[in-house]
Length: 500
Ligand code: HEM
Image (cartoon, rainbow, N blue to C red; front, side):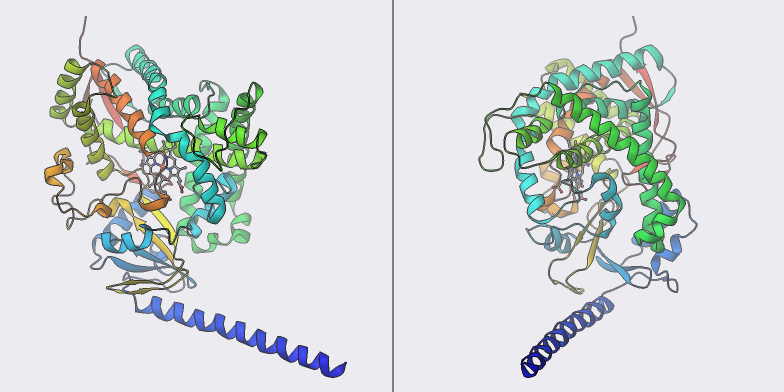
């Protein structure tokens, strides 16, 4: 008996030492490889590179980050957040393709953890089989055929926007941010959620404010290494703001789900196991998956509704804001739209020339102002690059804003020039130098929805108004937030094209 016990203890001991040594070996390899990668200069004791952002306002933080990245001489760079955390900035197209272009490295990085109390394990933040299953069932919700059904709803909301501007904001500087954010919030809710919202209520206003507050908290966490630790964060004043915001955000989406569930009738589709040609809105797919197949629960539905209400409105709103400003500053491009609209009317689906032209300005606007200006992953295995080996388990970060303004890939990068995207001007351009919707299997599921919604918007707005500049690319102040934002909004002037 004693001998048996001794043998078992010995074996367990050997196993423990083996596992421990393996972990230590992996640790040593991780830090050795990290140490060999090029790094950003100007590191602070203990706080690492994050130290240079301490005490800065979001706008100062934003411009400092741009200056630091502009000085980079290699597309791979390490950046230390405190003594124990290091991010690898992946800023070159070849390296980026290796990092995000395949089914490897699909897991998001630690920064997304800051969104988890809100979005939990929704499509944006989840990983592994859960992400794969959800992506499969939700992909049909963005099929082209259902998007075409949404056009009438987009047009109706554009009409409301146009009427609101005509009644209240003509011929004077107006910040388009709140007006556009209403447009995108109403459309995502009416289309994907099948629910009409009333944003004039306190509830609607609170929701928009809570989204903004959460964004500010996320920024504060990113730049303060100690707030990366949940226990310390929970003791900070930011936790109170987060708590208050989460209550508002979750109750808002609970109400959307409740409303849609009330008269919901199941239908005969199994999105998990078969491909269907008939298309349904997102919330109906989720409710059917719950009521008919019992393979998603209420919490699962809410995390997706939270994810899509946020991703589906804030991103598109940011892009519409910046594009409106760019068009106001480039009267020659508005002229082209006007001529085309005069000839072709509003038919969005069958006029490729018209669609191409709109696409081009939108593409250039998304280059200069990519709403999702940063994306991150965790490496699931080592990645070999010309600049060294990125270890397994590394936090990978790509600053899309800076990639899109790198003069190596975009000559005269600050210039708004839609013709860059003409096929003849794109020959030989690496596809990964332009990634407003990210790339690879975890790219944006809503990109076609967003493009159509934006086209509908400009089609309606430019037929009615001439846009005149108030803010310019030189005067707006960009800030660090979850989504790219202008600190004081984006102001333009709407002038009626045909004054009676
Ligand atoms: C101009 C508008 C938009 C831009 C620039 C944009 C950009 C992006 C980017 C860059 C990502 C990757 C994020 C990451 O890896 O962290 C992403 C993911 C995502 N987007 Fe969008 N997006 C836009 C509109 C939309 C819309 C309208 C929806 C929904 C209706 C949407 C839903 C999502 C979702 C759910 C994900 C996560 C996908 C996954 O991980 O499988 N987005 N988007």
